[in-house]
Length: 337
Image (cartoon, rainbow, N blue to C red; front, top):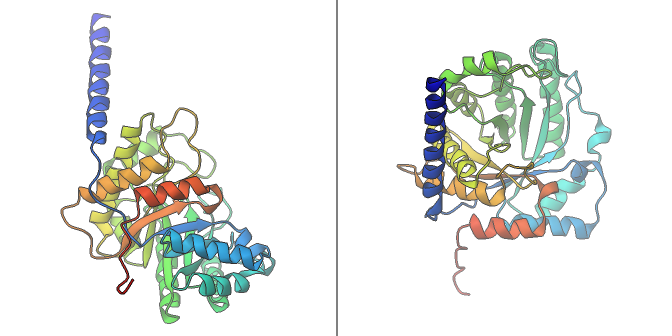
C-alpha cells in the first residue's frame, strides 16, 4: 500500500509539473502572424437553397474582409453508389456566379464526402472500383458547374487505405486536366506513429470506427503528394486548460508544416463552435496556438499555409472580429492612397 501511495503521488507530481510548464509556456505572446491563405467550411444551404442578391453580396464581403482564399461549400454527401442527386445542388451555378462577382479571386470548391465503410460498417465502399469510378464522374459534374476544385472529406481514413490513395491519384488527374484544385480534409496525425497499435488495442470500437484514424507520417506525405491542399481537422481537442489546448494546436502546426509544408498548401483547422462543458478549446486558443507553432519553425514552408475555419454556420460576427485581431497580418498599404 505504501508503494501504491508513493506511485500515485509521483504521477500526480509529474502531472502538476507538466501543467505548470504548459502554463508558463502559454503566457508569452506569439510573435508570428497569420497569413492571407485561409479556408472556410460553408453550409450546404449555399448550394441547396435560393439566396437573395443581398445575401450573396454579404457573403462576398465576409470572404474579402477575412481574407478567405478558399471556401469548401458543402455539396454532398455522396450516396452509397458515389452519386449526388442534382436536387441537392440546384443553386450551385448561382452561388458560383455570385462568388466570382462579389469575391473575385476566392476559390469555390465542392465539399464532398461520406462515412467510409470499415469492416462492413459505414455508407460508401471506396474499396469497390465501380464506386470510385462513379465518384470521379460526380466530381466531373461539379467541375462542369464551375467549381474551382473538389474538397474531399471521407471519414474514417486509416493509414493503410490504398483505395483512398487511388481515388486521390485519379481525382488529381481529373482536376489538373481542368486546371482546378484537389483538396482533402484529414484527421490530425498521431503525435507518435508508434502509438497507432496502442490506439487500436485500447480504444473501443464505435460504429465503423475501431480506433482513431490518425495518419502516419508516410501516409500524410502520400496524401500531400496527391493534393493541392490538405486541411488538418485539428479541432475536438478535449483538453481541460487553455495552455494544454494551445500546445496541441502549436505542436500539430509545427509538425504538419515540417512534414508537408513544402509539398502542398496546408490549412490548420480551427473551431468556432462552442467547446463542450469543461474543455478549453475555442477560436482564440486555436489561433494563438497555430501562431506559436509557426513561430517554432526553423524556417517557413515553401508552399502557402494558413487556417481553415470550421465553420461558417457556427461563426458569429464577434468571432470574426476575434479572428481578424488574432490571426490576420496587417493589411498591405495600397500605393497612392
